[in-house]
Image (cartoon, rainbow, N blue to C red; front, side, top):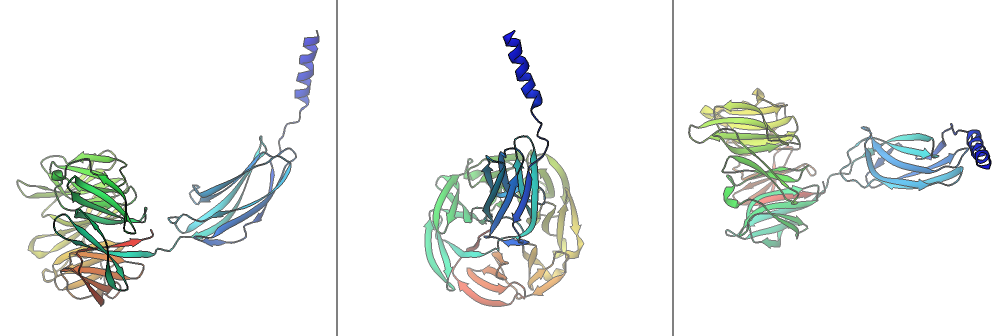
Amino acid sequence: MKRLLYILVVLLLFSCKKEDGNPPLIEVTAPFQSSYNFGQQIQFSANLSDETQLESAVVAVFNSANQQVLATKSFGLFNTYFEIDGSIIIDDIYLPTGDYYLQFRVSDGTNESLAIREFKIFEAPRELIEVIGFNQQGSNMLEAQKLQNNQWQPSFILPLQLVFIQPDYYAQSVLIAGNTSDGLNALRMDDGVNISSTPAPFPLSDILWNDATWHAASRTYWLACKDGSVRAFSGTGSGVSQFNIIGNFFPKKIAVTDSKVIVATSNQTNSQFRIEVYQKSSGILIHSTPLSSEIQWMNALSEDNIWIYQSAEEYKQNIYKVSGNYIDEWTNFRFAPSSEVTYAHLQDGVLFIQHTDGLRRYSLNGNIVASGSAYVPSQITYDNVNNQLYVIQENDVRILNAQTLQESSTLPGVDRIVLRFNK
């Protein structure tokens, strides 16, 4: 009987407990700014209250796609009223300019409340950190020099033969792929210091051509191989992928996006050429287009904007564009026989084409923006921060105004050049 009475008392107590149907109240008192720059702190404060004890509060920044960015601030609450304050620093150098919002999420253990404050964040400015020139000294010694006060200053020497070089914006360093006694290696340089070295998991003799295509987002570079395969080699050692070209064709040029690999191939027995689009994750062939002549140059500007240059018959040149999975001829870039293309460079949405009668800058709709002198370049590099164009011709670096293509100065003595930016 006593046990039954105890159970009834407990049930009565629980039945008399009032349900908490009211969510916490949030009074946001900061921030008040409508915009922030990279490096600034978002100062926030809010008054939180509830008729029952508060439990927790979280303050975080989200972008317009409702994805969380930057750091999160969390608070443990043990009363019915709290004043919270703090700051979140905008320290993500890759955060793009756009609309963002600060979210206050408060809970009393049963109910939850949200409050937001919207603002704009302006991305970090791109900065040129340094210019590095490379000279190949024999078959197994690569010398690097940094440009200081418009002169080359010796920096470091690497025991390798240069295959590929690319600034790695994600690591704020320089990726150098080179041949060593151990085969192909990736060396990551930060301010002249070797911070990592990753040997490729396949022999050097497998590589078909002395170049590679860099995909910045995955930090991998892609090579064409003699057995008809396309292989990805990660400079960070995070993994390798491979797929085989279908049929008796072999890869020659490669362009890579986040989801696709575009390969220019050739049949070595009957001089047939084609462009193929492969799914990057699986290596499945999506689309194939036959061509009348070999592809000379390819570049992936964005996921659905891949540019391909072909030197066609009778000295005519064609520019092709991959939109989606299909390949279309870009007729605005038909050139007369008297202006044969010898070099093309596409970077940051700007197209530079070296003709036999001069260097020209084009907009992506085919219009000529500027014309300059004729060069025989082995490399063209674009500095869109300082609006300069570096053209290497016979070991001389000619620095041009990228807008007018007028030459401003000449630096002697390097084979290749790389610009290291902060992003």
